[in-house]
Every structure is written in C-alpha cells, then in structure tokens.
Image (cartoon, rainbow, N blue to C red; front, side, top):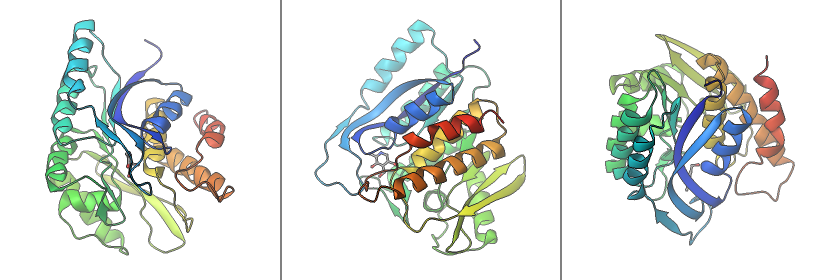
Length: 277
Ligand code: PXL
C-alpha cells in the first residue's frame, strides 16, 4: 500500500485540544491514514478543568482487537499517548504483537506527568507498568518529568547535559531503544529536544515561551509521528515537530483568552510544507 496507515491509542477529551483531537488532524495532515483506539472519553482534559466526566474504555480494547485480528488488519506503526488505566498497558502490548506489520515501529509517549508531578489519576503502579511498554518501544518520547519517574532519577528543574545523559542512560537501562526527550532547556530563555538514536545524542535548541499551553506534548508527539512516518530521519522529524509546536504556541499567544490548549490548527499548513523539504 502506498498510503501508510497507523494506529494511535489515546483518550478523547471532547474539549481541550489534546490527545486524539490533536493526533487525528495532525497525523492526517501529514498524509498518513490514522486509525484510532480511544482509551477513554472525557468531557475535557484533566488539567485546569474540574468536574470532568471519565468513561474508561479498557474493556472495549480486547474486543476491538479480536475484530481487527479476524479482519486481518495490520498497521504500519502504533503510537500511544494518554492511557486510561494500568490494565490498558498490557492490552497495548497485545495490540502491538497482533496488528503491527513486520518492522512497523512502536512509538510511545508515556503521557502521565509534567512539571515534576504525575497527572491526576496516575500512580506508581501505572509508572511501573509503563516501563514494560518502554522496553518494547522503538521510540520513546518522554518529557523530563516522565523520564525521571520512569528511571527513578530525582527530578530537577534546572540541570545540565550530564543530567539529561543520565536520564537517557536510565531509560536505555529499562529497555528504551531510541529516545526523543522534550522540554530540555539549559537556560530560562531556551528549550529544546534531545534525540538519542544509534548510540549518538543530538540536541536541538529553540526559544522558550514563558507561558506554555496544555496539550503541547500531544501536539509534539503527533507531529513527530507524522513526520517520521513520512520517511524523515528521527532527528529531522524531532526538529520538524519542535518547530511546529513552537508555531502553535506562538499562534495561541495571539489569543490571550484561549487558555485550555494550543491553537494548533492554523499552523498545519506550515507543518505540511516542512514535510516537503
Ligand atoms: O496532554 C496529555 C493529556 C491527555 N489527555 C488527558 C489529559 C492530559 C494531561 O493532563 O488530562 C485527559
């Protein structure tokens, strides 16, 4: 098949510009067919809203997988984000075993923590189970907080390249193969992404906006997956995704009343153009 088809597993936050409501448009815009498996349905995301609803779809997962197996459906990649329960991690492993085409990459964003804390609803049991998924993943996309939880290395707000190397080493010790670590900044004005692949580490530095937006990790991982599946090398895909995410944050800042996510939509043409180079 000429058109690649991927499967992404993450939640539907009905309002909030995160998870599937960004992954589906972004990866589709990259020219990749995007099948979905919703991990949960929430009325909004859990950051900043209160009283949100949460419908756990864990029990649907094995039933959906059985049907896909009967239909002989295979995917060219599996990309996971926010999962709705610890049990889902084993189902994701089953899905990877059953419906990934030979050689298709497993891309894991261990979306569970930021700014030094786990997101609402996550606990150490989930973190420990996530390590199994990282061991199976071809590419892992953690932020510094997630890398710290996964490795057991103390979280630091400010750090040097030796600390990032230590986190990467800790991740490879639990079985990570290639790592794209986001939100790495060595000064208050700057942020960036560090890529570990083929035994080498490369860092891409860019400006840091004082005010971040909710869901930018999902925007980043989706743009990375789209660019990577379009045949970009891992480092080039990481840079394309970083530039796109920055552009989304810039757009959002033009609309100060937009507080719950990033307006990723208007920058999609830029992302598409960057795939042509
Ligand atoms: O952006 C990650 C994410 C995805 N989905 C839900 C969330 C979050 C982060 O808080 O709450 C429901």
